[in-house]
Image (cartoon, rainbow, N blue to C red; front, top):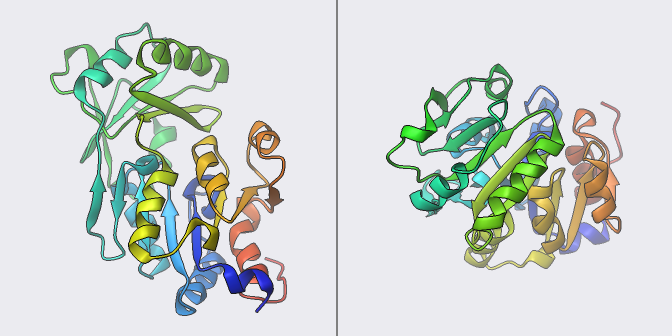
Length: 277
């Protein structure tokens, strides 16, 4: 056991672009490392922008009890899959955000509890789910009665279009919403009070451990506060360069394609000899 493993008690990881490989799956090697971490009594937290219905199916493949922070902090599920925290954006706030002029080529999504409402059906988005448990529903957003949502999500291949949309929405909603680019082509809005780091803090308090005793892994700007909060934050090699620039003091590890998270934990926390996958 090395020095780092003596102080680290909590493992926190994002899913897409981090724990998951480019096929949006957890490799058998990563699974084996996390099972060993659990067997050695490390507290494990997955913190993702994904909806909980989608994310629960993924983390179940690890076959160990872990905490789930989903929708960037709007939901917390216990290792027993019980809801510990739930927070939605108010209907009027979402309605205001969607009332701006939005390029019809931009895919708009509202995360609801059981379905996601969208103006465009997207095979690209569906591909993120191995089993489609969280179903899309095509809607006309101008005709909704209840706009309340777990989060608001926009996607388009042109990053600058999303940046422009972000500015317009925040110009009249900055007191109620904050944003994150989970990927350059994915713009997300949450309630001002919601963030992965805020939800993680609730779990750590419940478990009587501190951020200083935690190590975290991420690849997107929705991971930024989480990475800054923990005793050690690690950035994936596949993360956008602007995130690496903003967190230039942090170590960059192997990519998600290379099982970067599992390799790092195996070597630095479990103290095993590096392996080639």
